Length: 227
Image 1 (tube, helix red, strand yellow):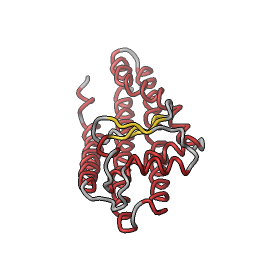
Image 2 (tube, one colour; image 1 turned 60 degrees about the vertical axis):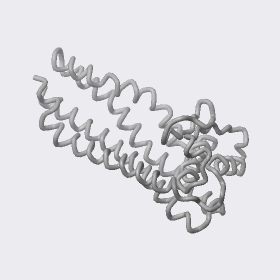
Image 3 (cartoon, one colour; image 1 turned 180 degrees about the horizontal axis):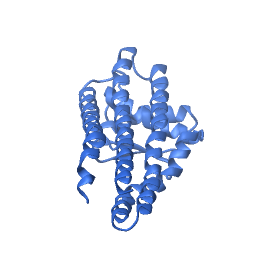
Image 4 (cartoon, helix red, strand yellow; image 1 turned 135 degrees about the horizontal axis):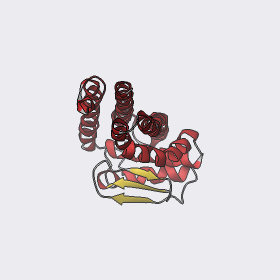
Protein backbone atom coordinates (compact mmCIF):
# COMPACT_ATOMS: atom_id res chain seq x y z
CA UNK A 1 0.00 0.00 0.00
CA UNK A 2 2.85 2.43 0.76
CA UNK A 3 5.23 1.39 -2.05
CA UNK A 4 3.77 4.19 -4.20
CA UNK A 5 5.25 6.78 -1.84
CA UNK A 6 8.69 6.10 -3.32
CA UNK A 7 7.67 4.44 -6.56
CA UNK A 8 7.06 5.70 -10.07
CA UNK A 9 5.63 9.09 -9.12
CA UNK A 10 8.70 9.89 -6.99
CA UNK A 11 11.07 8.92 -9.80
CA UNK A 12 9.11 10.84 -12.43
CA UNK A 13 8.31 14.04 -10.52
CA UNK A 14 10.52 14.46 -7.48
CA UNK A 15 13.90 12.92 -8.28
CA UNK A 16 14.67 15.19 -11.28
CA UNK A 17 13.63 18.22 -9.22
CA UNK A 18 15.89 17.16 -6.34
CA UNK A 19 18.82 16.66 -8.72
CA UNK A 20 18.27 20.14 -10.14
CA UNK A 21 18.07 21.57 -6.61
CA UNK A 22 21.37 19.88 -5.80
CA UNK A 23 22.94 21.45 -8.86
CA UNK A 24 21.58 24.88 -7.85
CA UNK A 25 23.01 24.55 -4.35
CA UNK A 26 26.39 23.54 -5.75
CA UNK A 27 26.27 26.45 -8.20
CA UNK A 28 25.61 29.08 -5.55
CA UNK A 29 28.27 27.68 -3.22
CA UNK A 30 30.96 27.51 -5.89
CA UNK A 31 30.11 30.94 -7.30
CA UNK A 32 30.04 32.51 -3.84
CA UNK A 33 33.35 30.85 -2.89
CA UNK A 34 34.93 31.97 -6.16
CA UNK A 35 34.01 35.64 -5.81
CA UNK A 36 34.57 35.68 -2.07
CA UNK A 37 38.26 35.64 -3.02
CA UNK A 38 37.95 38.50 -5.52
CA UNK A 39 38.04 42.05 -4.05
CA UNK A 40 35.50 44.54 -5.34
CA UNK A 41 38.27 47.18 -5.46
CA UNK A 42 36.03 49.73 -3.77
CA UNK A 43 37.45 48.77 -0.39
CA UNK A 44 33.96 48.80 1.15
CA UNK A 45 32.87 45.82 3.21
CA UNK A 46 29.48 44.17 2.96
CA UNK A 47 28.40 45.98 6.13
CA UNK A 48 29.52 49.34 4.75
CA UNK A 49 27.74 48.80 1.44
CA UNK A 50 24.58 47.76 3.27
CA UNK A 51 24.80 50.80 5.55
CA UNK A 52 25.33 53.14 2.61
CA UNK A 53 22.29 51.82 0.74
CA UNK A 54 20.08 51.84 3.82
CA UNK A 55 21.00 55.42 4.68
CA UNK A 56 20.43 56.61 1.11
CA UNK A 57 16.92 55.16 1.26
CA UNK A 58 15.99 56.77 4.58
CA UNK A 59 16.43 53.54 6.55
CA UNK A 60 19.12 54.64 8.97
CA UNK A 61 17.18 53.09 11.85
CA UNK A 62 17.68 49.54 10.54
CA UNK A 63 20.68 47.90 12.26
CA UNK A 64 23.09 45.47 10.63
CA UNK A 65 24.29 42.50 12.66
CA UNK A 66 26.98 39.89 12.05
CA UNK A 67 25.87 36.27 12.47
CA UNK A 68 27.66 32.95 12.37
CA UNK A 69 27.48 30.51 9.51
CA UNK A 70 27.95 30.53 5.77
CA UNK A 71 25.27 32.01 3.49
CA UNK A 72 23.11 32.70 6.55
CA UNK A 73 22.45 36.27 5.42
CA UNK A 74 18.86 37.49 5.70
CA UNK A 75 16.57 40.38 6.49
CA UNK A 76 14.26 39.88 9.48
CA UNK A 77 11.03 41.83 8.80
CA UNK A 78 9.71 41.25 12.31
CA UNK A 79 12.66 42.91 14.07
CA UNK A 80 13.63 45.08 11.09
CA UNK A 81 17.26 44.05 11.16
CA UNK A 82 19.69 42.87 8.50
CA UNK A 83 21.89 39.95 9.50
CA UNK A 84 25.01 39.25 7.50
CA UNK A 85 27.26 36.22 7.83
CA UNK A 86 30.78 36.98 8.97
CA UNK A 87 32.17 36.31 5.47
CA UNK A 88 29.87 39.01 4.13
CA UNK A 89 29.83 41.49 7.02
CA UNK A 90 33.55 42.22 7.19
CA UNK A 91 34.72 41.36 3.68
CA UNK A 92 35.10 43.70 0.70
CA UNK A 93 34.86 40.90 -1.86
CA UNK A 94 32.49 40.98 -4.83
CA UNK A 95 30.44 38.17 -3.32
CA UNK A 96 30.14 39.98 0.02
CA UNK A 97 28.96 43.33 -1.30
CA UNK A 98 26.54 41.62 -3.71
CA UNK A 99 24.88 39.55 -0.99
CA UNK A 100 24.75 42.53 1.38
CA UNK A 101 23.09 44.71 -1.26
CA UNK A 102 20.57 41.96 -1.96
CA UNK A 103 19.51 41.74 1.70
CA UNK A 104 19.10 45.52 1.81
CA UNK A 105 16.80 45.10 -1.18
CA UNK A 106 14.44 43.15 1.07
CA UNK A 107 14.55 45.90 3.70
CA UNK A 108 13.59 48.46 1.05
CA UNK A 109 10.78 46.18 -0.15
CA UNK A 110 9.47 46.02 3.40
CA UNK A 111 9.65 49.78 3.83
CA UNK A 112 7.73 50.27 0.58
CA UNK A 113 5.16 47.56 1.43
CA UNK A 114 6.12 45.63 -1.71
CA UNK A 115 3.06 43.44 -2.25
CA UNK A 116 4.74 40.09 -3.09
CA UNK A 117 6.84 40.40 0.09
CA UNK A 118 3.79 41.15 2.24
CA UNK A 119 1.94 38.24 0.62
CA UNK A 120 4.86 35.89 1.24
CA UNK A 121 5.14 36.91 4.88
CA UNK A 122 1.42 36.28 5.38
CA UNK A 123 1.55 32.88 3.67
CA UNK A 124 4.66 31.71 5.55
CA UNK A 125 2.93 30.39 8.75
CA UNK A 126 0.38 28.39 6.75
CA UNK A 127 3.09 27.11 4.41
CA UNK A 128 5.23 25.92 7.33
CA UNK A 129 2.22 24.22 8.92
CA UNK A 130 1.25 22.52 5.67
CA UNK A 131 4.77 21.32 4.89
CA UNK A 132 5.06 19.65 8.31
CA UNK A 133 1.67 17.92 8.29
CA UNK A 134 1.04 17.03 4.66
CA UNK A 135 2.39 13.48 4.84
CA UNK A 136 0.54 12.75 8.07
CA UNK A 137 -2.69 13.54 6.25
CA UNK A 138 -1.62 11.48 3.23
CA UNK A 139 -0.89 8.39 5.36
CA UNK A 140 -4.15 8.82 7.25
CA UNK A 141 -5.87 9.20 3.91
CA UNK A 142 -4.64 5.78 2.79
CA UNK A 143 -5.69 4.28 6.12
CA UNK A 144 -9.02 6.02 6.66
CA UNK A 145 -10.42 8.20 3.88
CA UNK A 146 -9.24 9.89 0.65
CA UNK A 147 -10.73 13.10 2.02
CA UNK A 148 -7.75 13.39 4.38
CA UNK A 149 -5.38 13.28 1.40
CA UNK A 150 -7.35 16.19 -0.06
CA UNK A 151 -6.83 18.09 3.21
CA UNK A 152 -3.10 17.42 3.05
CA UNK A 153 -2.91 18.59 -0.55
CA UNK A 154 -4.85 21.75 0.29
CA UNK A 155 -2.39 22.51 3.09
CA UNK A 156 0.58 21.84 0.84
CA UNK A 157 -0.78 24.26 -1.76
CA UNK A 158 0.16 27.06 0.63
CA UNK A 159 3.77 25.84 0.58
CA UNK A 160 3.73 25.78 -3.22
CA UNK A 161 2.26 29.27 -3.35
CA UNK A 162 4.91 30.46 -0.90
CA UNK A 163 7.67 29.25 -3.22
CA UNK A 164 6.04 30.80 -6.28
CA UNK A 165 5.62 34.18 -4.57
CA UNK A 166 9.22 33.99 -3.34
CA UNK A 167 10.49 34.21 -6.93
CA UNK A 168 9.46 37.82 -7.66
CA UNK A 169 10.53 38.82 -4.14
CA UNK A 170 14.06 37.51 -4.66
CA UNK A 171 14.42 38.67 -8.25
CA UNK A 172 13.25 42.14 -7.31
CA UNK A 173 15.68 42.33 -4.38
CA UNK A 174 18.54 41.40 -6.70
CA UNK A 175 17.41 43.98 -9.24
CA UNK A 176 17.39 46.66 -6.54
CA UNK A 177 20.84 45.51 -5.42
CA UNK A 178 22.28 45.88 -8.92
CA UNK A 179 20.79 49.36 -9.32
CA UNK A 180 22.58 50.52 -6.17
CA UNK A 181 25.84 48.74 -7.00
CA UNK A 182 25.82 50.36 -10.44
CA UNK A 183 25.45 53.75 -8.77
CA UNK A 184 29.13 53.93 -7.93
CA UNK A 185 29.35 51.52 -4.97
CA UNK A 186 31.65 49.17 -6.86
CA UNK A 187 33.81 49.66 -9.97
CA UNK A 188 32.21 48.89 -13.34
CA UNK A 189 34.45 45.86 -13.89
CA UNK A 190 32.97 44.26 -10.76
CA UNK A 191 29.36 44.56 -11.90
CA UNK A 192 29.31 41.49 -14.15
CA UNK A 193 30.76 39.19 -11.45
CA UNK A 194 28.28 40.68 -8.94
CA UNK A 195 25.43 39.76 -11.25
CA UNK A 196 26.78 36.21 -11.50
CA UNK A 197 26.66 35.91 -7.72
CA UNK A 198 23.08 37.15 -7.57
CA UNK A 199 21.97 34.95 -10.49
CA UNK A 200 23.47 31.86 -8.85
CA UNK A 201 21.57 32.64 -5.65
CA UNK A 202 18.35 33.15 -7.60
CA UNK A 203 18.73 29.69 -9.14
CA UNK A 204 18.26 28.11 -5.71
CA UNK A 205 14.83 29.74 -5.40
CA UNK A 206 13.86 28.52 -8.85
CA UNK A 207 14.94 25.02 -7.82
CA UNK A 208 12.93 25.19 -4.58
CA UNK A 209 9.84 26.14 -6.56
CA UNK A 210 10.35 23.25 -8.97
CA UNK A 211 10.75 20.82 -6.07
CA UNK A 212 7.52 22.09 -4.48
CA UNK A 213 5.62 21.72 -7.75
CA UNK A 214 7.05 18.23 -8.24
CA UNK A 215 5.92 17.22 -4.75
CA UNK A 216 2.45 18.57 -5.54
CA UNK A 217 2.27 16.47 -8.72
CA UNK A 218 3.38 13.46 -6.73
CA UNK A 219 0.65 14.05 -4.16
CA UNK A 220 -1.96 14.33 -6.90
CA UNK A 221 -0.71 11.07 -8.41
CA UNK A 222 -1.00 9.33 -5.04
CA UNK A 223 -4.49 10.77 -4.62
CA UNK A 224 -5.46 9.27 -7.96
CA UNK A 225 -4.25 5.83 -6.87
CA UNK A 226 -6.24 6.00 -3.63
CA UNK A 227 -9.50 6.87 -5.40
